[in-house]
Length: 206
Ligand SMILES: CSCCC(=O)C(=O)COP(=O)(O)O
Ligand SMILES: [Zn+2]
Image (cartoon, rainbow, N blue to C red; front, side):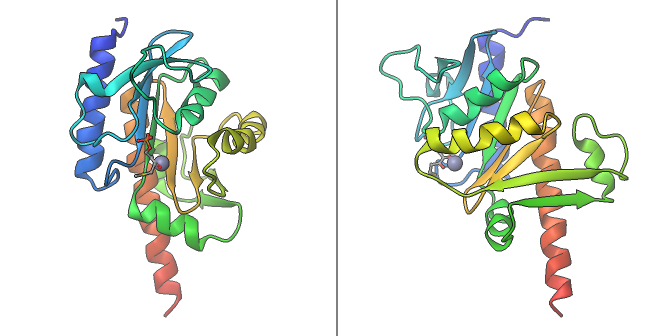
């Protein structure tokens, strides 16, 4: 069945309620999107409360991140969404969240990536079928210049076609999927792994 703007709007609004309810999109943070076509994306308007989204809080942008709806301001992080849709035509939804665990873990990890290995829950990521795998999650330093940040992320994506998500240090998580349900599953999987990692590190300090 082809997704309509109405069904994709509903999926984004429901995702916002869920992610805000879990505490992963506080204080108007986060942005969400879904692919409308080969050249257009439905995205959250900048600055909106993500637990109280309605259809007016969404707008269409092109793959260059330009608003197609005058009067509506797209997310400040639009380019981080559109670069993913341009990177892979099978991406249908992108989620960006600001959880405590993603923020803390990305701040205390001094390297430029995290590796998750031997967790059964890694199988929640698209393309992974065994715990005997490694999920490599890059951490990019935060930047208020989103075009510059996208420019630093692009070569990493091109070199890692199996990438399932990335962290921005002190900021949050980006992940994606063929459909909104896939992106939501990956958000939950990342959050589970972040919590495990922080718990393991806390135990090792004693
Ligand atoms: C209050 S959070 C600061 C901006 C941010 O990181 C974010 O995710 C939300 O920005 P948007 O423009 O998409 O509302
Ligand atoms: Zn953000």
